[in-house]
Length: 464
Image 1: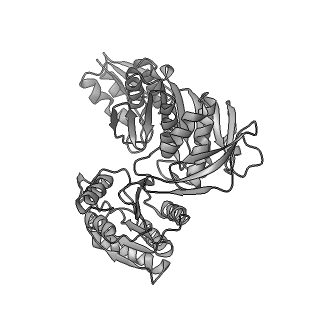
Image 2: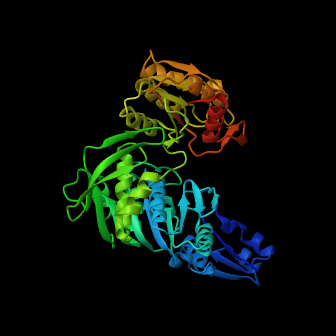
Image 3: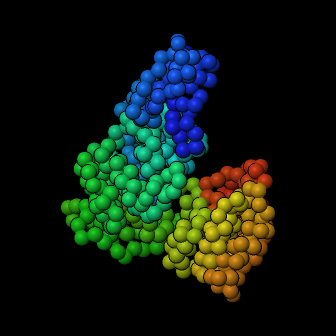
């Protein structure tokens, strides 16, 4: 009695299963290309509807099936290469501070009051996404903030959704290759489609790709930045660093469209946090929020596994971050360097059954920029941790032959070692796993949530 949508995927074409699903009781088939005559002949009681794109059809069918839930909420979509997850969390914090009931969909999963669960994709498939939006609306959410990936737009996962506000963070080469985008220009073009399906676009005027990305946009624009000659919301080039047991953040001076200035504190470190905060301020202003909840939300915003402070000591700072490649690691360490720690210590490994180039790159960066490295496991999968560490050491030798490090294959032991040997004023970055709540050894996943493990050990050992 059901409807089966035949999708042409990157690995297989489910039109091949048309006869099989009909035999199992499907009443309607949605197809994108003709089925073989012998298959059609075997489907006398099945309604077959042909669409130009079954992905697009599935999105609109799902939208209708779940009662168009996006129309019941203020929809905010965030796109860009980096900063999507952090910016959505900041916007959520600001909206909640203003009294809104907010749902969130993205890399870290689905959140709505009292609920959280993980997702397989940053932007889920259209049927799953519409089902989630219905959950949020039924739970009383009046706003939904979601990450909108280029894949999500290209594959029509967000077709049928119109956003009140679209946000652009920045653009770097990514997701280019088989089954993804054919070129950087195509990647940029799909990102830009968000600004043909929103009322207002809040965009980063400092990014060199912004003008090309916005080609063909149909929305009103609100701009933010630090260096661009003319922007609506500008942050001062000079910013102040904030560091105590509860916060590793920044403070900057904001200039608004009318020339009014005020100081803004963000509870996350670095220049990238200022850009994410500017995007959030732009969204808040578009939605008519007062200054107080915007500033309260920015100060309190927390993203699990993204420069997430674990406040266990007044003497040293320890944080967790998802950085798991060379570029992200370099950006993080350079940001943390600004805080002039006594020592910058990095605890890291690299994933098994993944490119060795990542191991060499992370090893090289940490050898150059960290004062001390603790080499350990990440998700080894089906490789030996010793082999992975050997590859990391190859990169370290290239970066700095005299780099100081220790090898501790068990990650829990490595965390304990980092805490036991912390010196006053140290800044310890535990990177690679971030928000992940498991450890993968030989394909077996076991619970491993670093924040909890660090807090438990600190309590056991009486860290002050």
